[in-house]
Length: 257
Image 1 (cartoon, rainbow, N blue to C red):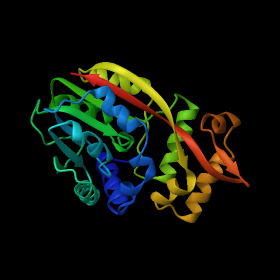
Image 2: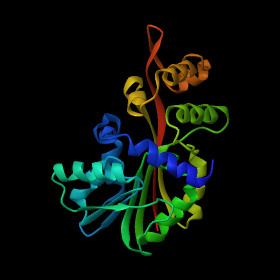
Image 3: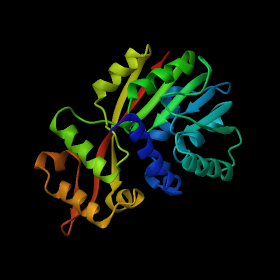
């Protein structure tokens, strides 16, 4: 798959998703949202760029704490849904920007905070995303990333295959070590790495990505027939022979310029 193909897949997947990612409980809630705000210590004078804003939930969480939020996304349709959600939520200091995370159309050293939550596994070149984030940050600026992370070896291969079946726009979830290397390599100073488990309701998780019945059955079978170690690692919940929920690992990274 080429880089252009990967980005086209993202536009197709999310352009047709409607309001699903605005209303998704998994995206709209979670202790990780206030934690992002807590660790980054936003200032009332800060300008924040939220990359791959999706439903706009990070933008909404940070808006009361900063001067201005730029909510960016690659997909015009989902950016429109986010703008409506933010406006109807009473947020007045957010503007939207149609933008590729790997080629941000902003000047060098033009923002104080860059955030990105649960999106970079869709990026074909995550190194370019981190480099671009570092470029647009002011000296002393903060970079806050949360994304799915995987173990090295077979467990990571399994999870990435599992995610790709559910969502064809999934490229790859990286390991913690891979993210740390990219962050440091972009000239940022890593301040914090913090992992946590996130529970997913299987019905909601597969419905949101509009899986076919056959693909959903294949995905469920992957978990049902996975090794004991894999099922334990993902806390797979099974009721009457069907998967009802599972967990994956998200990792928060905080870095400064």
